[in-house]
Image 1 (cartoon, one colour):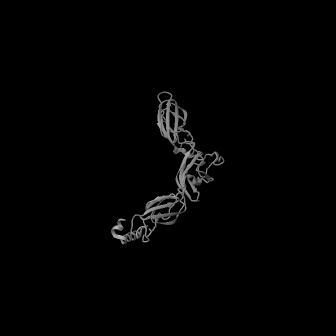
Image 2 (cartoon, one colour; image 1 turned 60 degrees about the horizontal axis):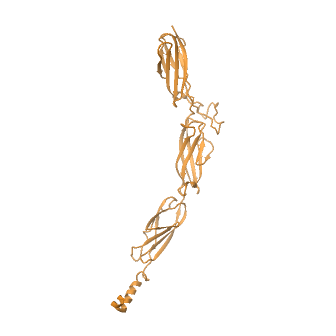
Image 3 (cartoon, one colour; image 1 turned 90 degrees about the horizontal axis):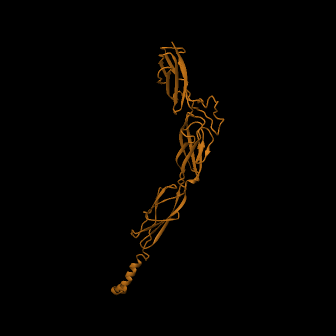
Length: 331
């Protein structure tokens, strides 16, 4: 009414024409919708960035609104981020709306690839306690996930190779026993997801010989000892009874106790280097006892009578053994 009174009928027509040339008119061009994404070939479980900065308003207006429809979810903003939970082909729709509430949509198809499973690590637990030894029952567990799955149960298969020629085992946690010690083994675990993608991880372990107490053995010379003679003692024949080969509960026929050799390894380890301590206690029939240390020692028999000689050996696992002998010293 005000415009008509001020400008007359012709002025009202002019205002109407200007209005029709704007939002409600045929002269308002719809916006152009376009977008890109990175990475171009994403994996499931990987964040994807969608960018609608290619969209524009031909009327030079900068007030576009952005609405996205991705995997059934609605997002807003020129740049959005989304993580696809599983591999497959997805349609992504962008709708842009200008200040005149005119909208344009574009849909693009994105292929989301299946990633390989992820193995976080292998743990080995000795059910017998202590260090890993031949004949021990070991428990192997793997931590693995499928990045394309909603939860770790999408790992469809776990296969173990224990590196000793035994049959494969299957399962997230399995048990195994090595009958042969004194050597390294490479354990390989392979996991497979529900889409057939695989991943493998290796772990090297050392299996010790089975720990048993040592044996203390010593020699004394000369055979006849007189007062003032130097007595020589040697514990070189003492040995550690750790076994290289020990039957496992699931394969008692393998590496039996009477096996002379076990795949190139003697049934008993060479224990001399595993005896870490030799302690000699010399006790004469009269007077105080004294102590000597070492694999080979000597002392002077300064008096006649009997001498009590005791050797105590200790192995690398703090197991002890002892041997005692009485020698006579004459004039």
